[in-house]
Length: 99
Image (cartoon, helix red, strand yellow):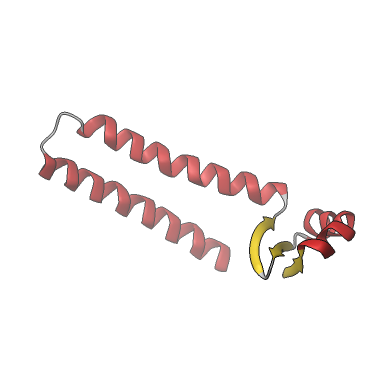
């Protein structure tokens, strides 16, 4: 569940929000002047998102290292293949969470 609070309210009930995020695994969005500026998520989810991002950049870095000396056409093909791998990996993990 996602809860949205304004900045002033978040300051007042910060400890409560931390409890909701850490114990109930809720997400809290803090708004400033009606616009979302901060998302509070539990640390396990943060670590998962960080690892996924790191993994995706590792794929791109490997492609970059392999394609520096290649022609633009071959580099494009390799990059397209890498993007498709990341997308299929992402959709598989999304399907697992949905099931």
